[in-house]
Length: 530
View 1: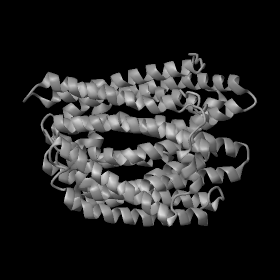
View 2: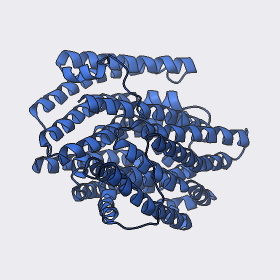
View 3: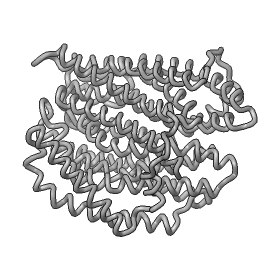
View 4: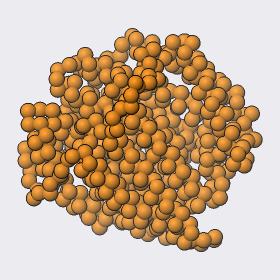
């Protein structure tokens, strides 16, 4: 468990830094643009390359590439075989990315129409969305190469560079917001800010790629550019990527579905949904992505060596860590959503009414937070065995349910109903994945793990009661001045955390070995990990 916790700590810690910068970015964006025409157009333009990134680069490509590269690295061919495989993939991958990006930029009006045809009802909104989307889409090709370079390092348990790269994205975007705000001035055209932001998205991809290229070379790896050649290994990778695109990306595909429905709602709905998802993404990114990234290469090694017992133990540990962190996070976010949205986002062009709607969206979204994270743990159980088909079917079932629910709730409950449908579909996907793993004997829920989670739920209930009691008392402060907002949120977070961990300790929800791993002091500093 120590190596898992170390890797999760490295990835999660740097992801937390990225999420903090991302949070600062969205706070500035809300105050500078509010929830209006330009904000909606930019959110759509940013959603397109970002969702394709999660779907292809960090989703399908990573889950297929990392196990194959790891097997080549630890197999008979060693470094030489791994290097050849990486070079062959890069030579084909680069041209695929360039072709795909070019076609999508040419077809952008049609793509925007498919996702946001109702933008045409507002003069200039559809045209702005197309223009901004063309400005941001080159980011996909750049960040896909970043994902490949991160995979090379992850296979060597060097997780820090890949986890740090998103920090660079958010720093560049913050610079874009401030530059656009300065160029716009008071009372100026918000499209200036949106354009500056769109340019900064692609610029951030250049910065991230330069950093990862430097990190790979520093690790002693040398990639060579070759003429593209479809070797058997590259062809095998492609065969794995196609189903994994769907199986690993139910959450990302749901983003497109949600975007389609959100753009049919009143202006500002898409922006409010994306900003609310930022709060949901904080624990999802820190815990879910960290666990999923860390577990895949380790699980692939255990399965490749035939150690089924160790694979079971690894996924069980990851499951316990996930619930220990996400159950209280989901409950706290749902109860304290009005405090967080008001304190962080309300101000400038972002009104109190915007904050109230956003709080309801947050509460609906985080109902599925544990499922979002657990899916990141269950999917590697299939991907490490090169089974990409099963997640396809479970994802398809969840997506169909998501669309069916949206057709019913969006008209009646608006953007809040849409967020709730996303949570339900993610939970269904999680349940189906576990059932398939259990039936095949690849992973099963033990009595010890079930008992630990039951105790965690008791601790969450105690924390929830405390937060529910405190929220009305803090109401006059989390919408006040800067100092009042800070101390009122600090009081909520501090009290909630103290009650949860005290209750968890009393009821035995904390595994002693897990606590020892999390709190152990090393006798000497570990080697620096790039």
